[in-house]
Length: 140
Image (tube, rainbow, N blue to C red; front, side, top):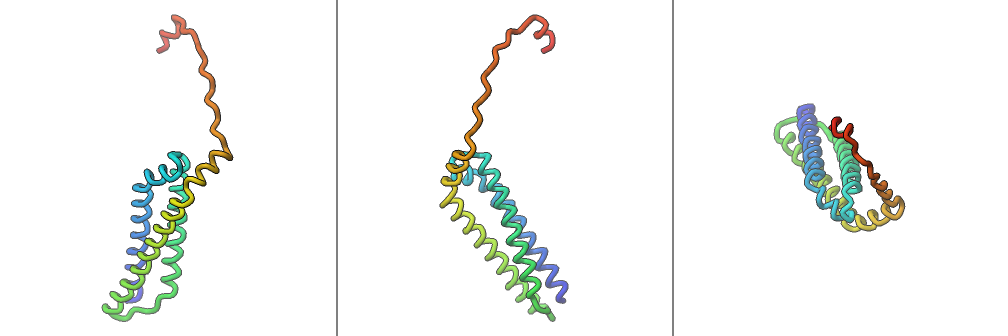
């Protein structure tokens, strides 16, 4: 029964972690772009970094929680085990989300300004005017 409990826990907790990370990264792009001063490239980069960090923290927590779990002997214990450990994983997911939202909201514009001061955008190359010849039009 313990192996069943552990297997169900891993499936549920890892599945929720993947779904939450995907949902937040997909739906949070607009929010991040605005928080980072409409810099889409910076927002995309930060979005990816947040997803990686989200996976690392949550999967690490899931593994540690599983290593601290005891044995499960019967069906009522299985339900209590899943309720406790899956509920704890959900709380960690929610806590990570609100921590990330607060940090991005509080520091996003400052980071965008700092990045733009550190690496100014390259100036566009001047346009060259090239006269078209009759042989050029044959190649089009």
